[in-house]
Amino acid sequence: MTETFDAIILGAGGAGLMCAAIAGQRGRRVLVIDHANAPGKKILISGGGRCNFTNLGTAPDRYISMNPHFVKSALGRYGAQDFLALVERYGIAWHEKTLGQLFCDGSARQIVDMLLSECDRGEVELRVAAPISDVAHGDGQYRVTHGGRVAQAPALVIATGGPSIPKMGASGFAYDLARQFGLKVVEPRPALVPLTLSGEEALFRDLAGVSAPVVARCGKASFAEAALFTHRGLSGPAILQVSSYWYPGQPIGIDFLPRAPEDWLIAAKRERPRATVQQLLAAQLPDRLAGALAERLALTGGLADQKDRALVEAGQRLSDWRFVPNGSEGFAKAEVTVGGIDTAGLSSKTMEARKVPGLYAIGEAVDVTGWLGGYNFQWAWASGWAAGQAL
Ligand SMILES: Cc1cc2nc3c(=O)[nH]c(=O)nc-3n(C[C@H](O)[C@H](O)[C@H](O)COP(=O)(O)OP(=O)(O)OC[C@H]3O[C@@H](n4cnc5c(N)ncnc54)[C@H](O)[C@@H]3O)c2cc1C
Image (cartoon, rainbow, N blue to C red; front, top):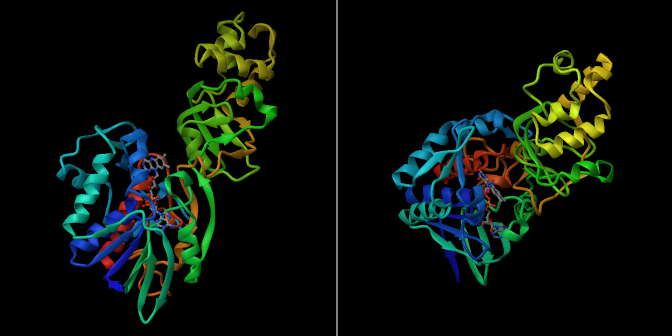
């Protein structure tokens, strides 16, 4: 027997649940299907269990997409303050951590429960642990075979996310489905992901566990946050941020002393001629990092023994230390995916496919990737809201 709905949403993550709640509350009969055994699993593990659910600084320039304008409409109509108002309506306590990042005081579970309550208000039917074996389209209806049942609706929403963290149920299903309906997919890459260093840079791998506030750069992108050395390479917020802009072969530049004036070593030579570079660095950076950098700079003796030119060069190197990562830790460790369903085929107002009436794509499945800091959930809410209004 085929069950009939007004809309079927594939994926019960942040985007799918928001979309379902909005459409359901607008009177649509909505079915949500997910192959995982529970909804919102990524929300539960996000933000260290406290869910960094939005960012007060949300703006289009904090998103990566082949079309940087695509996000404007949805974010303009459903912004950080709108989601915050919902959170407050549910009495969920929250705090701003840093850089506009809003977290639950308690647990990410509160966000999932809130979304599920919103779905209940819209009488949304949710089916989890329901593997999807077939999606077909004909006579104006999308037919989804899942767990031995068949449901049909004139509207289908792809909200199955990207392939980051497969052990949480993530898959490339959205891309396969998009291609099945003739939509293009921008090559997906792991993003917000630790980068790995080769043997040549092993000196830095010995610093595993050391972190420092830096400015990390990749191409034109630059982020002033902490970098962390790991036993495989580089991580920490600054590195995760630049990883989203990184292509294999490109160097990452790190400014270890972003507040130091350009000629600070020359000035130090005059003030403390007998001090060593390592001593100066150790006054500003963790000891082990200062030692590793000084060893690489190889300026033996005191500052008075160094030529000014050598000190200028050392200063320049410290402000733009080049690493050429040999890879990243991949989708297994990536928080998100850059790339996805090409926005050129979608309406930025409704998220509906331009050439496939009734087919929608939202959330991380789409070629829109936010910076670290709550931007990705804000995109999930905003794109889900936009489609939910249109269904
Ligand atoms: C460890 C971690 C921490 C994060 N922390 C934050 C944070 O604090 N703030 C922030 O903004 N972002 C964070 N993110 C990113 C954020 O989780 C995602 O951007 C967001 O979850 C995307 O929402 P979505 O609904 O599009 O996709 P998802 O949340 O991935 O949901 C997709 C759903 O589709 C289901 N699905 C997948 N394939 C199939 C299939 N074949 N059949 C049926 N169902 C399927 C999945 O089970 C899942 O429930 C974090 C990500 C990770 C991995």
